[in-house]
Length: 246
Image (cartoon, rainbow, N blue to C red):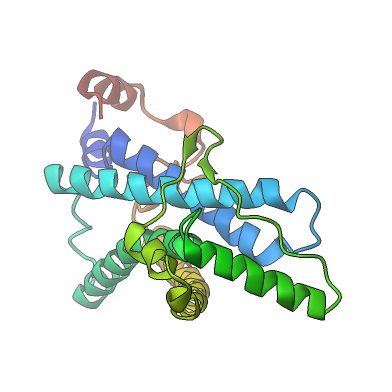
């Protein structure tokens, strides 16, 4: 194994970190797709929305795991020749991405929780109000609140502090207002996440293509543009990876 192989391997994240990165990335991109392309008339929309909810909660849980792993395993250092301003920008973008991966699922979860508890006086008042409003508009009464499941197996618990606001009829309006605000911030957050993801991807490609750094390889991607195909990975490097379990 030559010095280049040692440098390449030492600059990679661990296998756990790489796996968490790409699983979370796939779930986030699906949720972006679900928000922008699933119109109310989209066929089987409820099915895809259930995946959206499940993916969001999964991102939240995996982000917690990823933060714990990050605290236990120092990330590989950036190349020494990286300008300080670019290092600082990368740290800020990473921090904001972590914050978004926590806050986005939480605001979505809180929005879903902004309903009166099942069987409460508040729920009865809300149903009566919504039914009367629908009849006045000549529409069908709204459907009853569905039970939500994570990946069709585990029931999603509601955030009690949000749900309990509507337990009584007097809290229904306040809860409805809160639901509206939470939903609005969830949408605003989605646009911020898109901007952060663009900066994250643009920075990685800039370091890889223009600065000649092994940026993509840090996350397990062999660059075809600069260093050849994935099949060119040195055998000695693959052996080390298997032996260390990274």
